[in-house]
Length: 134
Image 1 (tube, rainbow, N blue to C red):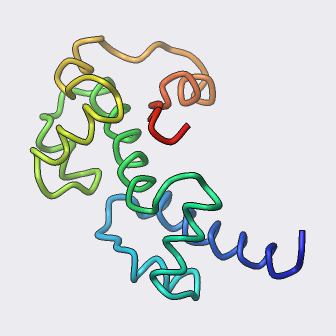
Image 2 (cartoon, rainbow, N blue to C red; image 1 turned 135 degrees about the vertical axis):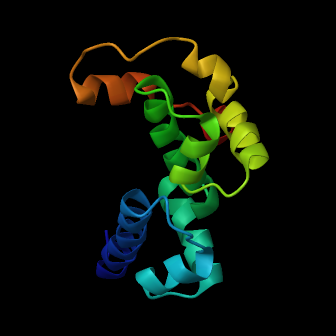
């Protein structure tokens, strides 16, 4: 890989790390592009080429992953969890959750509490699959 390619990957990783860390904050493409030190258009195109999904979809999936954990590890309301993970609309949260997980947040919660296994196994096993992106 060329030096320019390595630098591009580092910039995309820096932005993805920001999304992983600050998923509940209001993050938009221009702000993430600034983290990566590139234009918004270049950021979106390069992020998708690097990670196989758009920055917006990655952030939505990250938020849903966190919501999946919260739904099955406590008794807080779906609305509280929706707001905690960074969604501002319960309707958008529910629709996105269903698109990614395949069932509603309430149906997912009915599965019961999480199994007592090492976190790394639980995270891999529970990771939502979005078949539209391979």
